[in-house]
Amino acid sequence: MLTLYHHAFCPFSRAARIALAEYGLEAKLVEERLWEKRKEFLIVNPAGSLPVLIDRDAARPICGARAVIEFINETAGADPGARRLMPDDPYGRAEVRRLLDWFDLKFHADVSALLLKERIYKRFMRVEHGGGPPSAGAIRTGRENLRFHLHYISKLAERRNWLAGDQLTHADLAAAAHLSCIDYLGDVPWDDYEWARHWYARIKSRPSFRPILADSIPGMTPSRTYADLDF
Amino acid sequence: MLTLYHHAFCPFSRAARIALAEYGLEAKLVEERLWEKRKEFLIVNPAGSLPVLIDRDAARPICGARAVIEFINETAGADPGARRLMPDDPYGRAEVRRLLDWFDLKFHADVSALLLKERIYKRFMRVEHGGGPPSAGAIRTGRENLRFHLHYISKLAERRNWLAGDQLTHADLAAAAHLSCIDYLGDVPWDDYEWARHWYARIKSRPSFRPILADSIPGMTPSRTYADLDF
Image 1 (cartoon, rainbow over the protein chains, first blue to last red):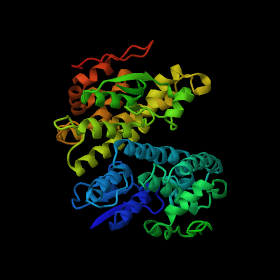
Image 2: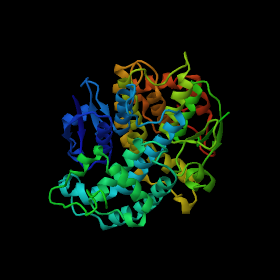
Image 3: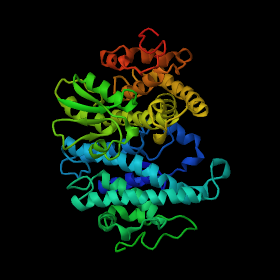
Image 4: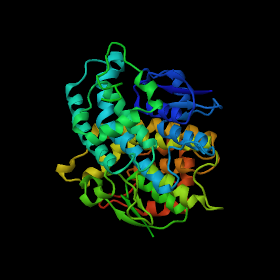
């Protein structure tokens, strides 16, 4: 049995959960609140990042979004006839990895790190961990940056079947994982980005996405569009 | 012939250059000053990040440190008998990728982004691009954080042959690439971290490292230790 250290509104953890489900793998989920810097967790992953996957060998944890994604693909995806979320040719894989950087570094820095911290994490963080009232400026910046990224996703979705090309890949999962967290908050202006919405509706309708859409934040109602497949 | 868009003091570019040399591949180097946000370059890589590798197909650039490293490994490293900078087993590769995150995300944010920007890039950036006098506070923070990382590298080097295990991997290249830039500035307190120094002396002595140590910054003399193999 696999174990995944995760947080319900951590986009990197969500991407790993969707990937596991796409490969037909079940994992026991263990919630980790990174900002508490729990000692036992830092022994497992000294970088203190999520997700962390424990496969058969508990002494060799798979730490970090990129390591987890490549590991799942190399192990579960290696079976003949298995679903693969990475293309077969190296140029195709390079395009997936370019987009993983795009979403996990750029989109995260521009948008999700700001909005998730200000609107979700700060509610649960103690003052000494950085909790407190949200910064209106940071939220405004995150929302403005989001438009640039929705425009880019629309451009990709307009000319490709999935974001990295013909097939569904980890790039779609990463993008959708980030957007799903923001969408809970109602911060995504879907109506202005038809192609992005069309792409997101398709990925959101997959069975692998269902457990994600069932997640909720105590005391915070999801947006109207969050779990609606025909938003 | 390969082409690599790079910058001499960009740690990600350096890691790619060392990797190419380890695989026995030659690439034409094209200098890119990211802060100028050159339009033609942003068409090649919209994320505006380095390095970018152009292989046979110029229409399919390999963008970003991670994509470049995995691509070189999958293509050049796939030949029978070829040197490989990734272990054969998936757990070993996960450990390399964990450390790539460590150096390219954490070390970069904690140390090299601060020191390189303040001490090198700002000298060449126009004011409208963020140039100007260095911030003493940012330099102090970068230097303090560096000690934590040298301690971690020492711990790894003490109990392993190379940072990720028995063999030389991309994790060593990434770590050494970051440190080599900082070392030019004379900011690395090697004497306090014997194991880290021992490990760095070995990687620095490799022929693949030689072109890196020949790079210099106009108007800025390298530290005494920079190119000295017996520092």
